[in-house]
Length: 288
Ligand SMILES: Cc1ncc(C[n+]2csc(CCOP(=O)(O)OP(=O)(O)O)c2C)c(N)n1
Ligand code: SF4
Image 1 (cartoon, rainbow, N blue to C red):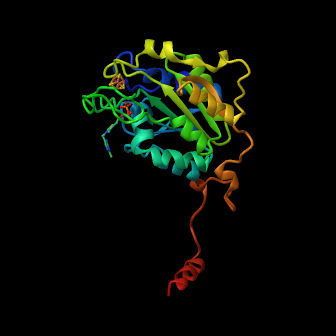
Image 2: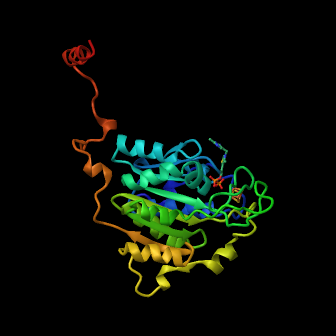
């Protein structure tokens, strides 16, 4: 059994002191150890952004992809080697702006993997522009008069797209965040975990204190049932998405891999692709 320390490497994160992404890194390392993984059977695939650096800071297989494209790469990794536990990760710009098309289709595809979004409601790496998660009126270098576009509600979109696991947490609540990642890793399908992860350098509005004042923890909501999709949607709408905890889980739907006809149990990565000269000639004949 690996401990969370075995998921550490010797690369020092260059996130700003106080950045919420440190907690996400720690929570992934703890959750991976708690569910019994070892670095050899975990792959962390990230996009581009401050948050996207996370794949380099965890001792596991890693791939620092391109902006908005963590999910296509991660899904490819999972299909090529179904024995690996796959985590995709990145920022709200990465997953909900340039990568939104991939996000929706990954959700409806339901491949068995976990997607963790570090939602700071701003573009951090490029030094503070408005993201689809920024509030109307939010002033940045790209919206000096305040954003005039409505704020995207990714978790409502996820539910409407057929998500089987939707959760949300906050960098300040390492215990809840770790537990939700554990549940996401154990879910047999696509799990989306959105994490309020403050950018202390460029976002002076959505600070740790602001989140603490505005978040409602679902643990305090009597009678909340994460198996009830309509209740989940209603709660998201009522609270403007400011809830944390396990919002929705459907354990009944099969994952994509389970439904592919002929998908062999042996991972593609370990299959012998050598073909006999006769079989090769047969293939060529088809094109003559
Ligand atoms: C194709 C492409 N378009 C734009 C960029 C520039 N770019 C890099 S990171 C980024 C957004 C960063 O914000 P987010 O994804 O929310 O991550 P954060 O830095 O806040 O963690 C952008 C627009 C890029 N690298 N590649
Ligand atoms: S700029 Fe913001 S998101 Fe990027 S490392 Fe610094 S605090 Fe974190």
